[in-house]
Length: 297
Ligand code: GRG
View 1 (cartoon, rainbow, N blue to C red):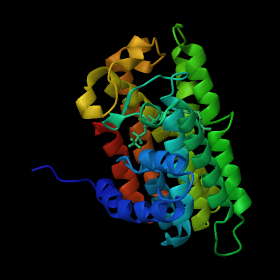
View 2 (view 1 turned 90 degrees about the horizontal axis):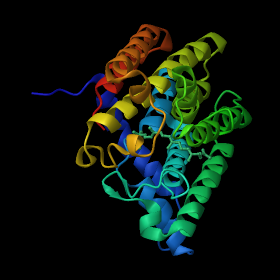
View 3 (view 1 turned 135 degrees about the horizontal axis):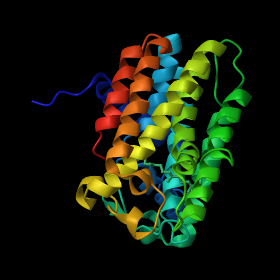
View 4 (view 1 turned 180 degrees about the vertical axis):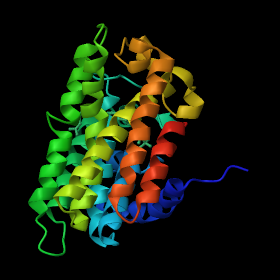
């Protein structure tokens, strides 16, 4: 019998609350412009794991024992994530037809509406963050700063640009990891920082969250690249083997599957050793490191 880890149990419990918050924040599919709202909802409610919002909630709970103030900011992270996937799949980027076992947003709604659905999700995310109600005199500007840093040129957008520029080139592994830290790692790390800030973490605890986030963020993308090599489309819900076909710069392609696996395990081992410094939910964070190493989608 396969038993779920502590982190998976937390994720299962958090998901309905995250979904309900997203449901309240997103425009209904019946309001105009219907096609735009349908496209936004198509990608947000497509069976994603809700990892980023769950990390935000877990960090807030770990610091303060509370999650209520983190719920809307957590939902904003999922909107940004959905936005990035819609744009990542576009013909001008990775040109993918499948995501989470369904046709990609632009395949269903057309390229123009897919671009706008992504843009609208990003704007709605920042609107949501700007309205965050924080206890103990917390400042929503600090939250915006965290998320802007995670998504901007030094975060996700910068990493996506490196990803495009590296295509078809033989890039040193150091630069591949620098790209991964930005493209994927920055939003995961930022999700933890956001939750910790909402919980009222002090400087030392924020540094511990950053150190943990740095490692799980990079390891997450290495594992994603390994899945792209090893898995099938049915299992992943998106195109497998596409990195090789597009000449993507990835760790398994640059240093080999075994060395990439060792690096992911090394980073997640380090993360597990930092976990005890992350507050009352330390066991869930430790379990997260194991979950990320063994995930299959
Ligand atoms: C303006 C924020 C912003 C971004 C635009 C398109 C783009 C720049 C960035 C794309 C970044 C990207 C697609 C990174 C890949 C991250 C990744 C491995 C996603 C898969 O995450 P999971 O496994 O997905 O959490 P689910 O389906 O579970 O939600």
